[in-house]
Image (cartoon, rainbow, N blue to C red):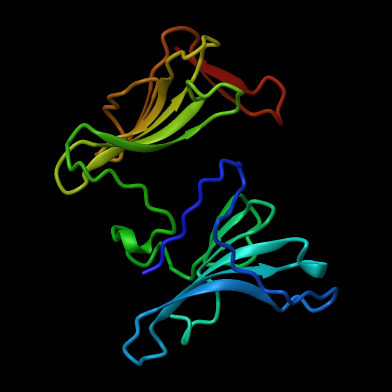
Length: 220
């Protein structure tokens, strides 16, 4: 129905612009956007993407995403000009801020009760899904990770905690702790045989109370 085409090679050339000429130093209740509507005569069936001013004269603003606009006047997702992305909040305070009244303890095995869900849809045992952590100018390795490994059908699995113990570029990370599919915790072992199984092949396991001088003992 509408095709906008341009051969301009400039990096920030916009062949199609939606503009609101209104401008104000004090009134920030204005913006410009695109409305998407299912046209069957029902005004409830629409969504929109809007750029809304948040400073004098619209010098900065937020990009907001609305759905079911006639019954929900609050943006479902907001990308602030600082770069913070909010889902369920219009005032994100972190690079990714997810807010919901969902109670994650209501039914702990139901994915819809989680505020964030990481899913591997392959449905294969011995595969994993996880989150990585990195503080580096390089992007070819990570410093640590938390990984869920599927060990059986119907999402049976274990939770692994991995850390990098070397300074090698693109070096491997090692599993430091696991909570296996029997709820056993293993530190220094990938196969815990009891509720808490700790292994160490060098110095013994040290138990200490820093508040009492000399109150420490080592298990070999």
